[in-house]
Length: 316
Ligand code: NAD
Ligand code: UDP
Image (cartoon, rainbow, N blue to C red; front, side, top):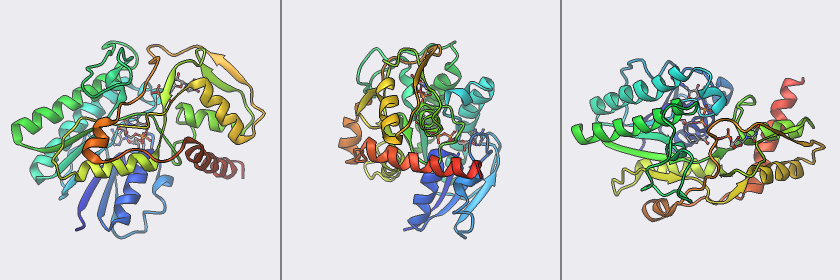
């Protein structure tokens, strides 16, 4: 059965892939985005589809729309972008989720909140399980994002308890792939764009901090499975690839895959940058029968080819 689905942040990196998948399954998709970090380029091939509707709007603003499912992804995700206007980032997370929860309540819709591994902060437990409550600095430079997402999770649970809402929370770990903004500032896009231009690769700190990188197709499959799970499993559930590597290893791999002459240089580690991160995905395996299957070499190859064509467009 096809449905009417709202995707906030649908012109962003993950949102654009999600819109495409939902459309390909025959649904009617409403993509709401204020284009802060997203771009119409990401959805240019969808705009001509009669089942696709782009709404240029802020997630904080009231909207009347008849939908059965809401994926709430609107929020800048790169540290560079969420720290650009921290108060706006907090408002996007908090007023945005209140607005979407009320829309879900009024429409009797199922709502999925895109939360983050950042709710664990600089984790003292490794790998991170959902039961871990985290180690977040509430007044640091990352807290506008971390605490905004934590508070949004609380709103989801309180609305669900009070109004018996059908809700889901996913905690997304570092995800990469085509449609990342060329100026996104996150590590995979930065390293690929630098390597393709034979510029210095900027490793922050000594590069020994770790992350676990998930290809976007794997992640989007999990979002849809979580939304539609018949167990009425609300989460929170970790979604990510448990294959962990250091940032320095990532730099070396990208230099190899791009055949680049770039040199690695070391810059200051940003404040409160988590030292290690890896999801424990046993809950996603058990409840959703999901685990990522794209190998990092294949995922990076597709991402490199995307940025090659983006750079070629710019240099035309
Ligand atoms: P992105 O920055 O590419 O996408 C976010 C989208 O939200 C953009 O299109 C942006 O224009 C839009 N947006 C921002 N503020 C808005 C507002 N106030 N009103 C309407 N639209 C707004 O980032 P992404 O990587 O695609 O992340 C999507 C979601 O997934 C975010 O909620 C993010 O917190 C979450 N997430 C992503 C990752 C990851 O590694 N990519 C990890 C954890 C969580
Ligand atoms: N990083 C880096 N060089 C860059 C961008 C990021 O070394 O040009 C590091 C960053 O300090 C962090 C890791 O890569 O340790 C992941 O950063 P990103 O911004 O992608 O995501 P985060 O997991 O920190 O939100």
